[in-house]
Image (cartoon, rainbow over all chains, first blue to last red; front, side, top):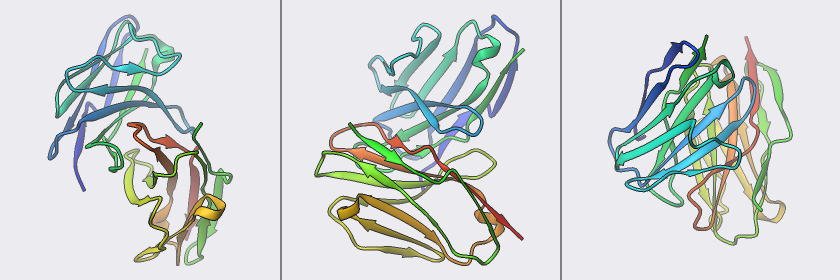
Length: 115
Length: 114
């Protein structure tokens, strides 16, 4: 299957700092990329949907100023957690799709710990 | 509204047992897609299968099989002769007509004990 690479796989940062997570689709052009957050023993919570060159669409309750998403190209999307706090600690996962009806491929996930 | 229900939250079996993971979905769309994903302890979701709403044929892939029943809005997943490596969280997902998003169920944790 297609490969989606997410980096870093884990990061520890101090409270108040910002962290950037990259998501790349390595072998296909992703018309749409998604960012999820997953709490322990819970399902995936969709944070936002991004299309190349346009602003991300955030789900209700997700702070767009805190979770900045940039989808600069058809193969790269970034999520920046700004002014991180311990409650932002979580497992963040990106995925990429070619379009409606196609399967989504997922990155390896990033475990963020804010201390 | 679209919804995916995985009623089982956790199942524990002994190796070589067969196990079926249930998935019931809700949608008003006549055209839609269904998916199953596996999330092993490493965390990365692995795509297993995609099925469109017009294809009700059951699918078999090795020890995995899927039963799609539109009449009951179900898309169940059976693992035959389970192995320890099958231990993971399994997610069922729905993609409604024209939508970019996948709607996921809450997932079902399968533990296969040796």
